Length: 370
Image (cartoon, rainbow, N blue to C red; front, top):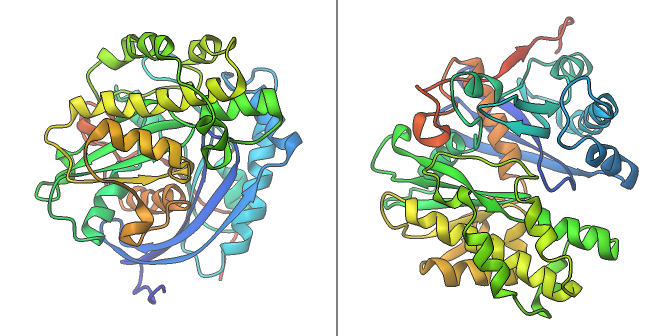
């Protein structure tokens, strides 16, 4: 339960996240001062309808002003507005991530659809958005941004030894944390594709949103030759921090085009696990345990494959009392408070930015609120 905030030292923040899996919008309330966590509030989820998801998919890889982007942004703003309105009572500030359509750090930048100014007006609250651009402008990857929150969670669960948070969304990413050291000692990076290739496969072939419970993958046989070519991808030889766009491993989907549905799902699932296993080679020290968040933690086939590749306990974050469905949304509420207070949201070890930086744009509503 949330405690009553004293002034603005503790703030009730409402965060929203729509990830690369393209399934829908998560929203959650958290109470924090931007450093410590004091409590968790209500949360909610809104699934994208078929037409809404199609509009977003049609704009993937595109930049502001290009065909379909305005339509996708309208979908994102409308869906978020409806959901956030359900949780807005008692909230001091909102963190809105938007929907990533294109991500090209070192090139064109990063593009999240959705105008935070529109939502600030609709919700009547200060709203923080465009979290990634400042980091990219300072030479960072702009991702992942959740490590700041993972650090706070490590303190919340009173972790003592090095551990890893693994997020299995459309793309996988890890945060290595040593609780005995400060957040500047964290290491974070994208591990490779996670749920996105399998989701795309079953959507195209079977009209399904995802491989529920890994049932399709469990029936298939992994194509080891595809995995060997996957492991040879240049991305895995780059030192972190490093990040990916949803479409960076498009060739992987082409590699399984000739396989049966089950074999293709099994191979893509194994590739997601292999990316995590290859990533552990970069950890500064072995992790005592890996805490998994995101939709992939509900896939027992993927979780088993990851555990076999890592050689340490791998468990959903629920086993330490956290909410794996809402952790990313909570993260952007937490980050919103950090931005409002001028605190760092990323470090050289998490995004490769030249120095610790606080990203995000704050939009104030024109009217007042109670």
